Length: 285
Ligand SMILES: Nc1ncnc2c1ncn2[C@@H]1O[C@H](COP(=O)(O)OP(=O)(O)OP(=O)(O)O)[C@@H](O)[C@H]1O
Ligand SMILES: O=P(O)(O)OC[C@H]1O[C@H](OP(=O)(O)OP(=O)(O)O)[C@H](O)[C@@H]1O
Ligand SMILES: [Mg+2]
Image (tube, rainbow, N blue to C red):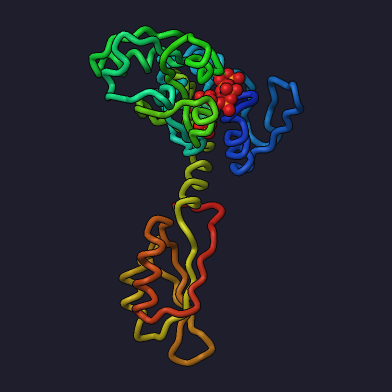
């Protein structure tokens, strides 16, 4: 049987999230330290552990069928791959930053200046769009050091908490690109590989649906049921079970994480009591 080849980052900011996702999908793989290729024991998938920069190229060439990579690297490399799914981890942004002591006048500050970055394509597209001419110096890492050693007056690099910028005496002045981990696929997958990929995406969707929803249980007087159903429609409609106490029921449903606090207020007003909210591990719609 054919196996789907998945390229993931060997070690770095994407590795933990990628392996965690695979594990939660019920796929078992043992990747000893230093092992660059591994097979799952219970799913037709093979893993390649690579530098993240190489993943879009390997997927475009068909050496790997799919890959997990940051959107920043995907856009920077501009390879022929299909973005198939957003994964929601390793969220960060690409920003322009300058020394803290400098006064920032707006994007024209960078006119004629030198900017160090590992993302020359994204930066030059942005500067072009803004009508700014600046010299871009491509370096592959430790970008935040550039102003303090006289290599450039500004940097364009990844920011998450902002602590690396802060520790290097820099301040963020423009956010130019937002990124998260994404799954990408080769353009020409065989029907058999596409079928394996569909199975994997089905599992990922079940995890993501579960993450964005909660299971809710509550007790209510029978006369409050209609009002509560209108607040909590659930996946189809809530389950209702009689309580030992006459005139009372227990209602079970699913609630979206984003609506949670607003709905709790409405439920209490409608007469709900003993409200329990519990996480869902997997959810198939
Ligand atoms: N501080 C951060 N917080 C969240 N996500 C991040 C952070 N830094 C980087 N990322 C995301 O994770 C990806 C990988 O970052 P990492 O720092 O591990 O890359 P790297 O050093 O180039 O690794 P490699 O050795 O594989 O080339 C980045 O391209 C970005 O999408
Ligand atoms: O805003 P922060 O939370 O400080 O995160 C940003 C830093 O994180 C990444 O580096 P990482 O720590 O992964 O080290 P690396 O340079 O070896 O990739 C990135 O290159 C930034 O330098
Ligand atoms: Mg890299």
